[in-house]
Length: 246
Picture (spheres, rainbow, N blue to C red):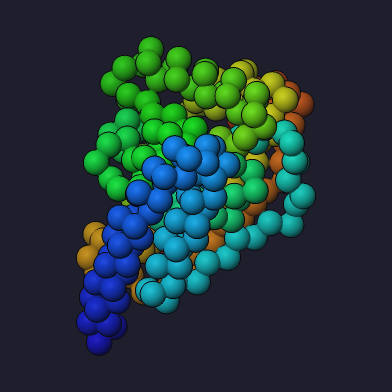
């Protein structure tokens, strides 16, 4: 019976998820063309409010636990483990005050209504994983961009999402480039739990009744530690809160 309910709710989830992507694509275009960055950002915020709300159709409970005051008017580098694409709308919505941008693979920059448009025009960076020079230059420029505008960069050092919740090895290169090019930034480690469970059956059906949590750790001034120590501290904090096979 649970599986049958999951099939029904998954159909509803995908219907509304796709509907909102289609609706907000022209809204984003109009907002950017006639209102500029700030109006476009508002449209992206509301898009992600609705995308987060779609998860409630599945009975998903979402908790964004943050007991720290994040620095304002400073660039932030948000470092997180990565369990599914469902990690991303909550980041955009719950951290909207900090203008989150993403380091994303170039393949997502075309063909997906609303999502591709925002990645290309909203300040995020698209990298070619097969072209290390392009990826390096893109991340360097991205660091300078968030430093200049006091925006936030969201980076997933695992590179690809974990399909079981078990954290993969963190790669230091992307974070190192961001820290070097956004010297006034603060690192904000965040641990995601149970996002992978939404796709435990491969995406159809999606799992129902998942408790999706985001645990924010204490911000760290990027230049307060040698990079090796900083990287180790961030990785340890994130992974220490990961719950595997719960």
